[in-house]
Image (cartoon, rainbow over all chains, first blue to last red; front, side, top):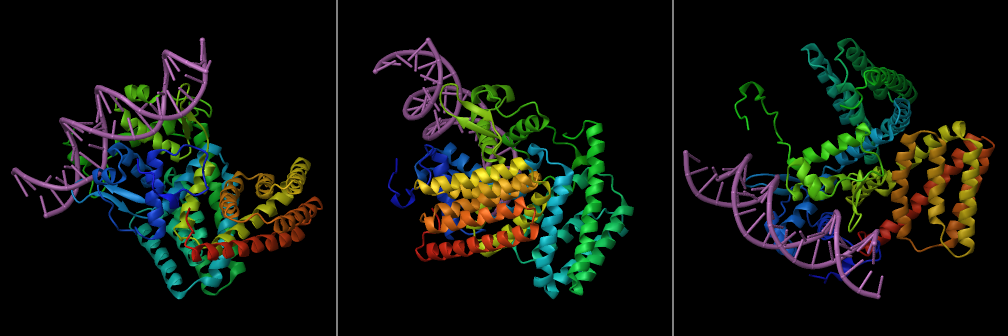
Length: 252
Length: 252
DNA sequence: TCACATTTGTCCGTATGTATC
DNA sequence: AGATACATACGGACAAATGTG
């Protein structure tokens, strides 16, 4: 096999015997990190990759599988298909945290407390960093939620988008990731819930008040509103879980 | 397969056809979530799984690859080897956050700010929930760090353990997960650094002061100490990154 | 120490489904 | 509508690693 890649043989990881598909995976990852491969770029087809790396096609497949799950590429079938560099890492993190929550059997209270702290921190930074464009975007999201509610579509996606947009306004991608992950969990809870337009109207109203406080740069006011809002949502989730546990339907 | 089901032909909906290995992957995940498969349990060998799911061995392999990367199983070669249910999801989250950072989606400053907020929140809860046993454990970690430093072993693992133990003391598993992930990133940075016993002595001293404040239940004092500590570490990380980027050695 | 069985790791050949032109 | 290019999947085979007797 091709052993000549002295620059990759650095002190890290003498632990396990590196498997071929792992080597290929990190090789491609390295190219992405370096900027040689950018989002939108297409990777050669599997057969071509196999030829270039001097391995079997199956080995390439497993490497691509890893890259796909890790959020570096997507794979499309058919003509003009194949592996494409695409950044979906944030989704990956959300899913992992999501899985971890199930595995560790984290309680709703723990989740709510963490969400409270993270979103409050996010809000603090958002108040300072938010731009007029961000404010417009948030207003648009709220308007969309209203419209959807009017025509009978439950606006829970819009309501989740509100929190995500808020995180973006903090101009800190770490908050974006964390809020994204938490919102994935929230979305899962909401999807188990009967659509309740009464509550969703209330949520929209609360979001509107938070936005209003933000426009006036009133952190303390927005903070208090957000806290009430999240605690309220947390209580509803607790009810859902209690209900699901009773029915022994917590997991599919 | 049944292709004629006009009533289910929803517009734009059926984007993805679930691939065989995805089906197998989620099937096994389901069993883990349900509690049928618990950590330590061994899965049948690949050939056996292929037989049972009525698919080829390669398909099973790709499913196992996904489960492995997602942190649900580990795989060992040889006799008495094979896939074992094991919970390494926290590592997975760390790795994903890793990747996100390396893609420069997240800057050191963003990371430090997030770490600051999360650990401060964690500390707030730890002060209220911490037990004498937790305090003893933290003291033990510090003592161990001192001992290691004395005999010439760099105590960065002990120093990281201090923060993890602090998170555990908050009695909120969500904080444990988040701090765990953040600390994995910190550990990676530290591993790239020349061991500096001068700095590590300083770190141990700062940890000791934080613990002292905790023993006296002085949140404000501990909070200020923690903030200085994290900001200081963040500054050092920034220096490392700047240095590595100059040398074009930022990756591997 | 040595052989053996088990299981993963890797490769090849081939067939099928699917999307694009 | 047919040809093409690609991923998806199957089955067989051998190599390498690892634990056991």
